[in-house]
Length: 184
Image 1 (cartoon, helix red, strand yellow):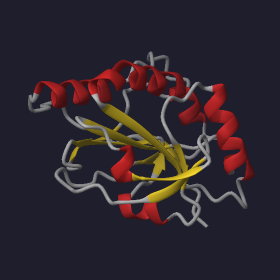
Image 2: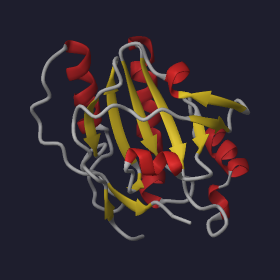
Image 3: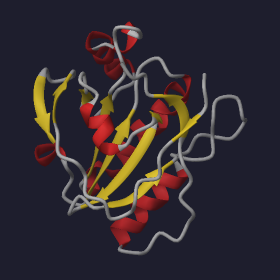
Image 4: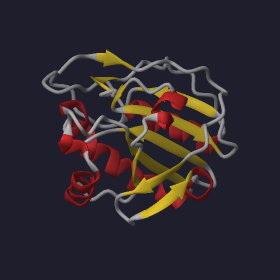
């Protein structure tokens, strides 16, 4: 469980486009069809990481909370499945159903999309506005496995509230911490 921080990509950066296989629907999905009318949360997650397992319930709760506000959540797994077979598409689909994902869970087999987003760890969170400009990147909240802090999604939740109310997010944006993406 190596603690790896996320890279703090410059705010205002445009979301890189993608077309990836969605393990839930069994179809190719692209950013344009998945983005939300008000905003989009793009998350790099995986199946085996204890940091991701720790936050799964909270990200599902947030996705449910904001689905009627046209904030779409999109999950991407970019891990090397040769060395980490539990992160393969068939297990991604099982994980999505076991955790009641209401959002697509995309498989980045080539790892090209993780590199375009400068993703470093799982989980890694990016919030984009309706023009796909980055307005938040970093942690879900201060909770980590075993630190005794409740996982409530406070940091991402606040960023989404600021987006919807058209207020500037004045909170310090802290890097996410998690397992490093398992590069090939």
